[in-house]
Image (cartoon, rainbow, N blue to C red; front, side):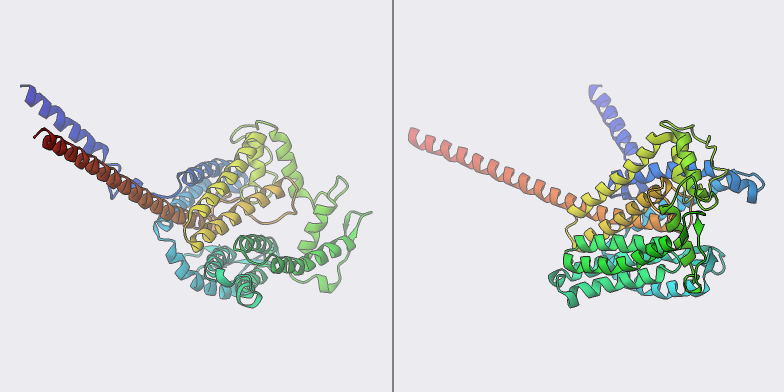
Length: 456
């Protein structure tokens, strides 16, 4: 009777273990999800914030284009998040060494795409940044692809040229040339993105042991056009009337007037400035002032109907207005935590390509986030960069997800390497323990035999 009860309880335990193991079976989605768990948590938190803030900030857009149906943009953002999560999942399942093989191909593809965009792309504010895809009739920003391709290719070059990276001809020029090409092609339509790519690349090259002397020389050369732009902006500003003077024809080319006005608005921003010129940043300041310490609450933004692009470029102002300085500080800490976890992946990665890849992609995302926030609080001239994973979905959102997926791919391989090392150490420890036990047993047996011989 007792034996039958025992067998029944054992069978119940076995069935319970089988049911519990269904969720973690080898073929389940959860079991296939690897990489840094903190980064996964950060992605989910930012996706949740994105849904709340985009839904709140697209009211005017919905009334303007969709007869007041505010749920359209919420569902659209949810779809972008679902697709983005799929992109992260599938890209993190790929061994990151594969990205080294496709890096050069993507880089070579991005160059003609950027050239095509400059001449035949969709234009907005005198800048051509997008191309329209046939059949599906959607636009995407080619600079997003170019950024990703550049950092992948740069990581590959740095990993292969570590033995001669200090040499100017064989080390510095081969790694610097791709950066210059991409930045020159992006700059005419999107100067802020070009500066962001250039700054991140310099940081990655510095970490990649490129000669500091060569880097400082390059920064000095690149600073010349920036200084010229600031000088022109100051020279062609009328302080008494608070507006831009008439520019000569040579300065009316492309987006030069836009760059000059943005520098002037940043340098001479005051109450006396033309309200139309500083409308965006003034509305952003109003949103921040209304938010205070704890904010007005989710969905209670009052400035979203007046602030241009509250769902993309100035979404951080809406976050502060609705969730206060506490909410804004939380978002900043989330991005800094993401950077720290990526640095941890960089330190633990045994191969140079994976280490540089994870660090380069994380740097560009975090620096982009900090610039977006700096623009919102008027610490940086107005640019067109979005807040990664938070601003309303588009090609930028999906390429951000792809970048995070690649970082998680590196983290997954680091995790697997650590697991193999831990298993090897555990096996070696168990083997040593078994060997010590066998020696102790043999020693005891020998002592017993000696004792028997003495008695005999």
